[in-house]
Length: 257
Image (tube, rainbow, N blue to C red):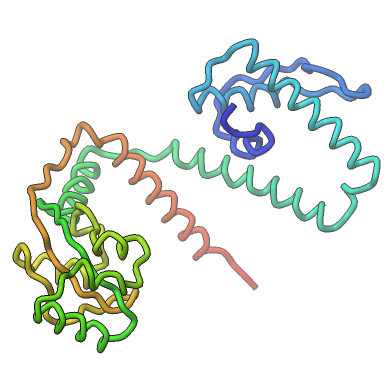
């Protein structure tokens, strides 16, 4: 199994599997409900695992180990400690929240018009081109102006990029690779798309990261995937947005003293 069953326990609320009633085992006389095994197995199946005897055996062993440890903790009175009780309460609350939001998401109806509108909005944000750019990032505007002056004097961008504050690109001559304009913060993107190929910004560009000197190396057409290809992802995106809005609406209506 890719993740420990212990960490998956709180994530398994979304399972629609019918839960069995008979215990799968008893530990020191205390039964372990088969429903726990069904929940964990259902989550594993959702992750692409096959339901095999080996998986069922592993789940059973994990639940036995958990019960052994839980009984040991209870015997020491740890379940009575305030900090442990708080963690248990938070875990229970987390499961309830997840179950509630999952049920709410099931009630949402996403229309074809909504999907098309979101698709068009994403396409518009991405644009119809990809840009291959490089940059040098510094802390102060004067530093950026000095770099621009050196570029105008004939120094190579790749060499000057070694002083960049961007660890991901400084050792690659400032190269950022191919990306659409939406991949960058607005100030950076606005300056980049105005450049001709092979040109650099002659005025420092400020962003929340610092001051940039940008050079545009190349441009190519960006072909967006067809709506049918990305429809499931768009539906999921719209569901998430609706759930987030529902949470904000509930919060706004709540009386908090």
